[in-house]
Image 1: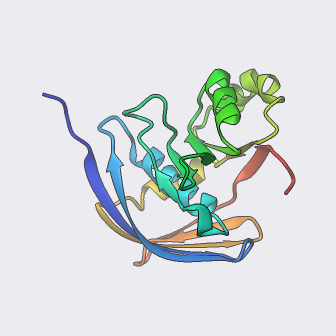
Image 2: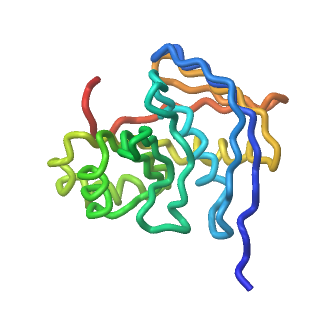
Length: 187
């Protein structure tokens, strides 16, 4: 018998002062049996950072990448089912990222493992043609601290200012995250 997903729920309060995005929403996260707390929380972080400034064409949502190989970790689709934003987490191969760049208007990747620099050195040159790709590195010690906030029921406040994020679990714990842009447009 296959092991089923574990369901996590989060009340997410986002105040992104850099982009003037303010959201208060509830999310349900289906955590794959092989997914770590760290990866799951990076998906939540990517959801917050990828929240569109204009939701007239839909919002970003968690996808089924670990169940469906043709789906990303998150995506934003418009009402015509066109992929506006494709979001990956981890260290996918260059072919997957190039395919995503051809399918979506915008592609973002959030790499968080301690081996990100080694991985990036092997794929960076292969991705230069993807003009719509932005690659972010979340420092490993920060992503591990973020994983400590994972609970089956979460209240997360995420504040973004000057490129730095503060994630608070509604109790006493807070994590500061400063993503490093490895590649992508300046805008």
